[in-house]
Amino acid sequence: MSVISSSTREIPETGMIPQHIAIIMDGNGRWAKNRFMPRMAGHKRGVETVRTAIKACIERGVEYLTLFAFSSENWRRPTDEVAFLMQLFINVLEQEVTKLHENGICFKVIGDLSKFDSKIVEFIRNGEALTAANTRFTLTIAANYGGRWDIMQAVRKMLEQHPQLANCFDESDLMPHFALNYAPEPDLFIRTGGEKRISNFLLWQLAYTELYFTDTLWPDFDARALDLAIQSYQQRERRFGRTSEQIQARSSAHGGREVAVKKTA
Ligand code: IPE
Ligand code: IPE
Ligand code: MG
Image (cartoon, rainbow, N blue to C red; front, side):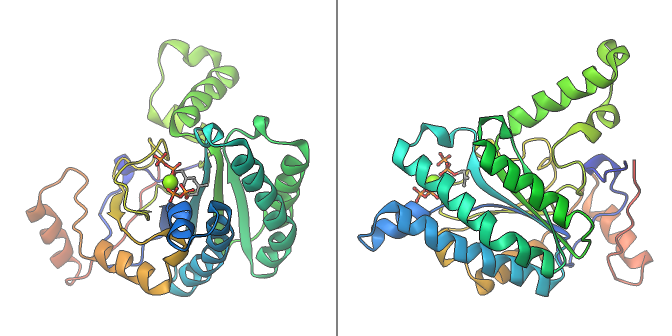
């Protein structure tokens, strides 16, 4: 399997629609609190925003959307909130997976599923199997996901399959074992809700991702808010370690257009 990584990107892509957007959907609790509603109402409303975001991404030509739904640290929340989030996840899986399939969407879940109820794991596996051949758009939900967990499990899997690598391995040996091994690295990272941190999301994969933070709370993040994030991304110059002059020389050599040439590992 070949995966595009920051170290294999030949020419930076700017002025384009990001191929892969990763989002920390934060601010559901505060959205509800602002309305004197229980936190759970914010989570329910957040699911509607997920639908809006998927539709808007597809319409704009984004190919991969990765959403942080539950972190490996979110188990620390009050038991009733964790139970509510689990039930919400089951309900959404039950109601939405067929619709995702009808819309040609490939559905994936990344994270440590061993902590989940067997019913949830079954729903996830069935949903992934049903939608596996869809190529139009890939929706990934990060559930009980942690960036450190991902790196550790990748090392363990690699060594299990290739014990001879124990003394000497490099990035290309490790990369096929990351949970998100089917997707290019995110081009644009969005965090709603005002915090400016990664909260143990995709640590490895965000190495050269353009970061965008907004105070907008997740339930209020609509298509217009997504456009603002994409516009911000389009104004960035992605250099991947090169100088601005090198990037501009490349761009004019391609008739003023940034050309995406992807060299795979
Ligand atoms: C994000 O919203 C959803 C999850 C972490 C499941 P929060 O629940 O963190 O909302 P705030 O940050 O408390 O407003
Ligand atoms: C990050 O949000 C995790 C998800 C959105 C699933 P949190 O609200 O849990 O993050 P912290 O605790 O404020 O860093
Ligand atoms: Mg939060």
